[in-house]
Amino acid sequence: MNILLTADPDLSAACIQTVPPAVYGGADIIWDVLRLDLIHPIVSGNKWFKLKYYLQLAIEKQCTGIVTFGGAYSNHIHATAYAAAKASLRSKGYIRGEKPQQISPTLLDAMEYGMELEFLSRADYSQRSEKELTDLIKEQNPHSFLIPEGGAGSEGIRGAAEIATLHDLSSYTHIACAWGTGTMLKGIAGAVSPDQQIIGIVVLKGIRESPENRNTTLIHDFHFNGYARKNEVLLKFMEEFYEKTSIPTDFVYTGKLMFGINELLKNNYFPTNSKVLAIHSGGLQGNRSLPLIFATRK
Ligand SMILES: *Cc1c(COP(=O)(O)O)cnc(C)c1O
Image (cartoon, rainbow, N blue to C red; front, side, top):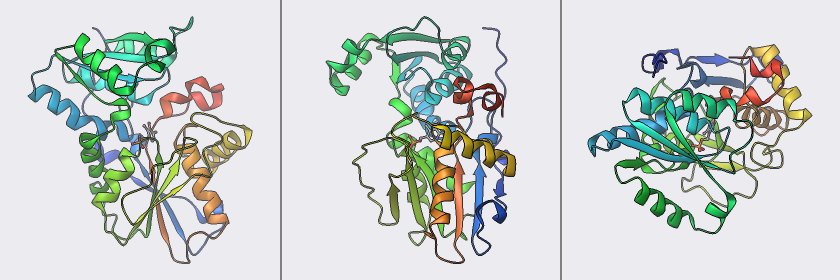
């Protein structure tokens, strides 16, 4: 393998940036963004936090590799491929869907980082329960450690809790993040004061899960009709947000998060003098399926 494996993420790069009030017209409310997208060019955002304890466990258990699942544009697959290589572990990604004619940039990167890919046809996964599928994969990879899709689960939550320790967040009345599997939100919600409101902007349609923490609210109004769905309104918002703040967002998670916060602000959701922190959880690599103006931004 000849790729350059750069150092661990630089957590000190995760600065807090203030959105100018002129952007949303709320002089009596502060809107800050925690830039986890800046910690590493590849393993950016929340994925580093969600993976770290799984990788540690894999090494402790003397596994020789990692296996995991994801879609063709998955930030999780991308980050896992890289982080596993850095930890000197082999990796194998089971990708949902038939092998396409053209492999996505995400998967090409994953292969370059050394991940072996296996495509799962719909018949492979739709006829089996999640448990049957993972049992089968474990059986086929006896020396590998299986990381749940998206880094979900207790080790992922434990790692995500550390997002809340990068800065003193105690002055924020509200902390908002995107909700995919909810792992990041659960980690953060468990690590801050119960007086602080945690808001999850749900990016999938039809999520039924209700949060265990009393201080958590899930908002279902900004998924844009489903996971990885997008429209002109969202892309236009992302473009304008970038022009005004220099903060790039992705269309699957952080674009919807910022759009949602902006709408909530416009609708006076937050009481006067609120201090709102949005977690920028990374994911910019996924924009490579978008038109060039978005795809090239870092
Ligand atoms: C994976 C991901 C999420 C979702 O995190 P969960 O812990 O699954 O809720 C949010 N934002 C970005 C950029 C991601 O890549």
